[in-house]
Amino acid sequence: MGLVTMKALLCEAAKEERAVGAFSVGNMEMVKGAVQAAEEMNTAIILQIAEVRLKHSPLGLMGPMMVQAAREAKVDIAVHLDHGQTFETLQKALDLGFTSVMFDGSVLPFEENIEKTKFVTEMAKRYHATVEAELGLVGGSEDGGKGHGIRCTDPQDAKVFCERTGVDALAVAIGNAHGNYPVAPTLAFDVLKEIHNTTEGLPLVLHGGSGITAADFRRAITLGIHKINIATASFDSLTQKAEVYLKSEGKHTYFGLNEVMVEGVYENVKKHIYIFNNRGEL
Image 1 (cartoon, rainbow, N blue to C red):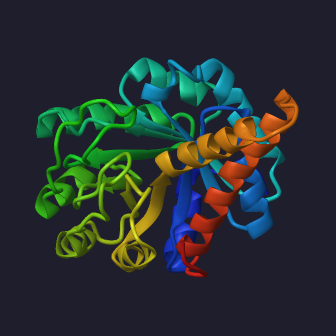
Image 2 (cartoon, rainbow, N blue to C red):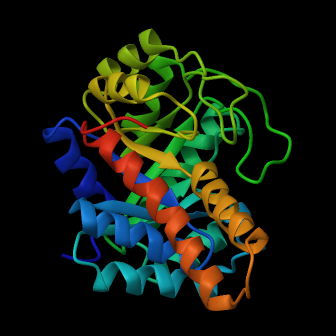
């Protein structure tokens, strides 16, 4: 048990018809809460951080903590850089011991996305690390800023892209979006099914998981989704717990705040693991 590649976790999940939860973290409390839930559920997870989050959570601080937490965990954990935008950041994550990186070239022209993704796959090979890429446009944005709209992944483009880049996992756009949904999204399962068929079993990734229904998660898993990203729900759960604590009567301390923040992430990660393992509801 301990630090493993994301590819190993996704291959195992595919055999067992489930998905691995990829939980974004931004501080020590989030790391502790996610690992605690994974260990209690005896389920492997992915700890991840997106490049846009690094202005608040520097990679040089977060990275070693995430890697060490995975090494000491009682379950297998992969450590992943989500939505990598620059080669420099991807390289730094690999040097820090991340076992997986994502290059997000989804806003680039198709050929440029392919060429830059190929460069990243060659870079990651030297570290025996997993590579994820994105094709199509997932709605919203990781940092809550203005998104680029939603454009569903073209199944034939996905086939060509995967063959030419050699990626280990592909993030797809099927009506999903980052951030909070005003209402539950309508996912294009027909498109997902076709992507699954054209990419011949390559693990697919669902971004923007916060707010999708349990039934839709499970249906997506049957159509090749084996990594599901959860970020906003964990950040919100932590914040809500902190707000309740700070509004409560009595003396407030850092240590009490620390404990409720851990609890907020722990509870959110645990309930999503239930769903991704086909064990329960949100």
